[in-house]
Length: 471
Image (cartoon, rainbow, N blue to C red; front, side, top):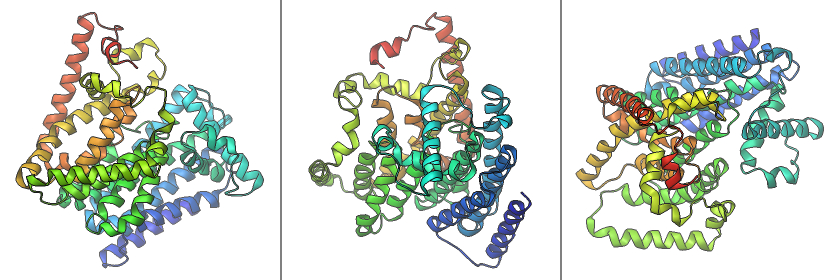
């Protein structure tokens, strides 16, 4: 642990001095790669034989070192010194909440049996998938091909294999997932901050967008066995790749497959979002004439024909055939589905009914409070941009597509409608501090009033909206 702390300190000093002297400035992509390489190297040096407590301390420390490196190499000059405090504070907060939540609700004797975990099937499945990766690579060698059944039965096999790298490096110490998820949430925040600059935000606005992503409730219980938090960083990186090269569409021949793959690994339909979103970004990223509507439809039809011909449409949606997801029939109840997407898990009183997953619901409640506040702030800004020169913000385009994908999908899961909210944070930041604070206050009062009225009206347990929309 002393060596890890020393490396952390050294990385911070070198990075800070380099920025002050105007040295060693890396693009964000290189900074992310270097930061994560440092993180994995520190875990490798620690190995699998550490006591669970020491292993957890090393993983938390390695994440901190990675953030210091990322700040010094890629963020400081563009976003300023305060960004490091935001990232480290949010990272430690997420680690603390995740560790405390796990020890309180699941395994108080964790340090005696760190590999034990038992909960709902989705969570258990991720844990066991990571163990399979750990066991295979430990017995047969690193990056040895995993069993065919792993790829056939897992809907997110690539992402699961990547998460399994954590167990391979540190052993099956389940709480190490807290700093792992937290670090990836900070990667997302860094991407959002730099994305805000590319979308025209001032530095102070970009820092607000970064802070919103860093402290968003989504993933705040970092010990949750869910792919969404690492997956959000992959999706954010995919969108940044597209937007960062929007001025040079010729690069999309290389960028688009990489971006599509990253998003696809999180959720198959996201491949279609990246493809269509890229086209819309190109079309609406310029000042448009209203007469170009016909041209827009022609391009979309051409892209649709290409996607269908190449089998990409089937690749994105094949898993959902016959299960009712993304069915045309859901369009007939779209207003109610959108209401569910805004409200999230409702009513909040269900946490007292011991429903499955209630231990994690409070952060979903808070995330939907933030979602509504951000929408209230961001949508008028997006509309103003459109009215000025018929230019549509690229972040807004991708937010609409990810949000509608979650709304239409079976279940209207909170994670599905929240994962793309980060692309709306730059627009919300442009509304200003005061507007954001007011919107957050109004949002929490709105949700409080809705919950109270729902209870007073005797609707608790009625599932009135779900009865209209179906699951």
